[in-house]
Amino acid sequence: MFKDFKQFIMRGNVLDLAVAVIIGAAFGKIVTSFVSDVLMPPIGLVLGKVDFSNLFIDLSGQQHASVAAAKAAGAATINYGVFLNTVVDFLIVAFFIFLVVKQADRFKKPAPAAAPTTKDCPFCFTAIPIPATRCPHCTSQLAGAKP
Image (cartoon, rainbow, N blue to C red; front, top):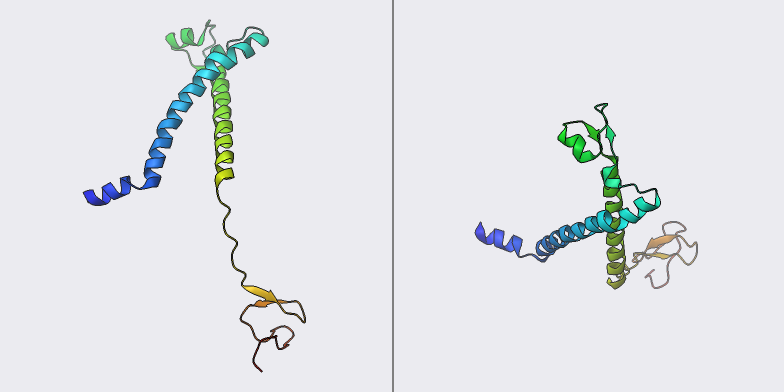
């Protein structure tokens, strides 16, 4: 059982997946920081000094100054600003993954063309199997066939 497990772990695709998950998690943290700390503050400034991470709807009916204050008071909130940050986060990650896959596809060799399995009858132009000696459509004797 240990031998089978070792063979499973040592397969290339399992190791590739493990590396991808680790790098993806680290990349996700970088993108989250980029969105929260670099991208959204200027956008919020242009839109009237809005801090997206602090946009929320207070369902308790009370007025709280921030999401942290509402959470400290135990109020139920809909944190749509955090959701917007997460959506932007996702879009950036998805775009970069798209670019990486696009570049990887450029380096892939095209799949070899499949060998043809049919040919056209020279008399009626119907597709017929290559080894056929007589056309099933027009019943003509094909060239190279024995009478």
